[in-house]
Length: 213
Image (cartoon, rainbow, N blue to C red; front, side):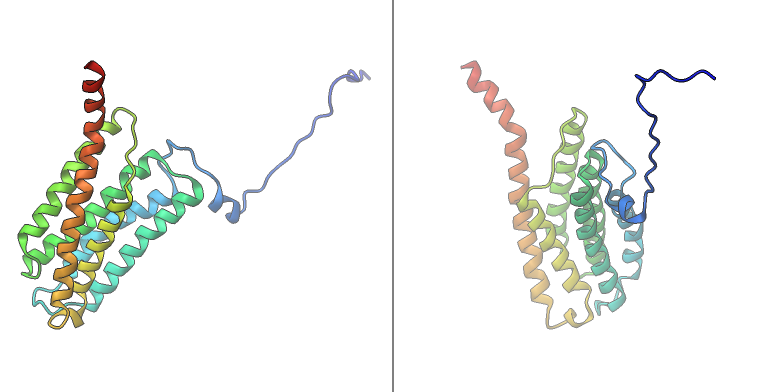
């Protein structure tokens, strides 16, 4: 019988069982698409139309709509937690703000159609969101990721609060000024965060102009 050379290292075969705990905490690649955070984000987009359908048209609010709105907002927190736990991705940096826009703008325009929100505050918010989304797509095509700023996150929270107050039944009369106040607060933060993105977008052009001088 022919023996293997003694200089060869012994063959070691190790197996690693991927348990649910390991699977749920495995880090993801920055370019990955199929992640837990993205799954929650896409689910939020798909469930959003159900919310728009259940919003009543009698200005009386609905606990079903309010709780559904609360659950969708919690999912926003959940996908952020999952992204931090597993690692952020370029797709998540694009999908999460997109899901927020679909949810918030869809709910706001639904409330406009129910004569609960004024059209102009919502139009201002919508224009800013569309412009920033186009900016994200343009710079994203160049391989640049644009995460949401702190002001943008506070802006999103104020939008969520204003919609939540408007959907809850108890807010039909006595809380009307509360949701209108938070709505205009959201408009102000929307404008400020939009200007922040504008400065970020124009900064390279100003730098080149100064260098040319």
